[in-house]
Amino acid sequence: MIFSLDRKLVSNQTNLVLYVGNDAFPIGMAQTQRQVGLSKTLTMAGFGVFVLCRSGTYPSGDDNPSPRGEFEGINYFYCSGYRYRNPNFFIRNYLKVKGCIVELISIHFLIKKNSNVKVFISTNGFFRLFVYSIFARLHRVETVLDTTEFWEYHSFSFRSISDWLYNQYSFFLVNKVICISTFLEEAIQKKKNPKDILKIPCISDFQKFEAYKGKRSMERQYFLFVASRNYLPVIQFVIDSFNAVSGSEYSLLLVCGDAGEADKANIGHYISRSRKSNHIHLFGHLKYPELIELYANSAALLIPLRDTRADIARFPQKIAEYLASGRPIVTTGFGEICHYFKDGQNAFVCADYNEDEFGAKMNEVFRNPERTEMIADAGYQTGLLNFDYRSISRRVITFLN
Image 1 (cartoon, rainbow, N blue to C red):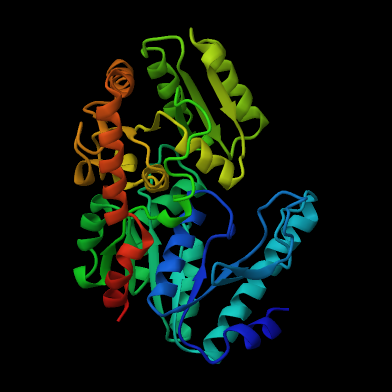
Image 2 (cartoon, rainbow, N blue to C red; image 1 turned 180 degrees about the horizontal axis):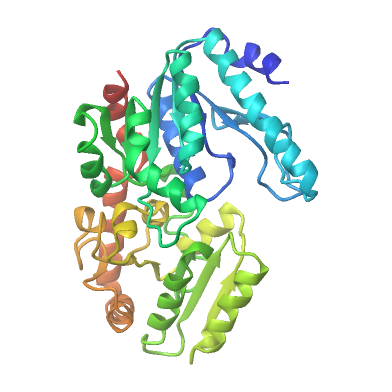
């Protein structure tokens, strides 16, 4: 069980952060990468960090099946006892129930054994947040919610009820809020004291990319878009925009790490309808070093945002990673993009969410290589100043204290 590990590693610590709410650590999608970045910021600021995951989400055959361990100075534990997602329906749900119970016991134990404990919550589910909030209040410890989304709902369902409650009331359940965008910051300020709100944009570890930055193992003749199956219309937008790119020597690489077989089939079908289908390549899950190498060898990295409340509220984690690789980004001028980037200076920014206009911006990447490299360098400096986790540690210390 967890108890022997805790006595050895985090017993009797001061300034301990318990990080809960996300069930994939230390490898995962954007939520996990942000959690890693914030955890490293907290460690740099003098806090010990312990991540609790309820139940496993990794597929069977994971390289490191141990439910407990340490990653870059961050301790973690899978409360169900397993890191992987069991294929058996009954066992899987038993492990979920076990994980819920052991997680609460673990939180109680860690609070009792340490001083000045804070509970960081990273979840988009209102009811899960509610449980953490009540449990923390009973133990009289401070809670901090890290929120990165504004939910839009179009049908009546349990999920839409949870999303509506999250948008309206999640901020009242916690003591402090960390948010990712100006849109969220302004919305939360209507409900909470501004002193209890801190905006932290997308963050990454820029030093991890140094070994790849400027390293070329192939000619930069491709665009790269790292996508999610949850944004299929955006994937289709990128494919349609690529049709407007001049020249037959350029390729488009799509990476969709969370895509299932049905998702890949849908995307593949859409690719087959493109007049440039022979130059579009779809990848599933890649190991992180492989993904970074693709970043570093690309001509440019694509991240189109739409003029919707959901996209204006979020700030994709991939932007920080894109910039850390030293390659330029092609994006659209909505939401947080307007606060950090200017077209032709530190990014290629399209004024509208339009396939022809976005394709024209992609064409600019090859039109003037020297200008493109200047934009890439300026983008890297913007990222290093604003999106490297080391740049925000002082603000975090002030906020938490």
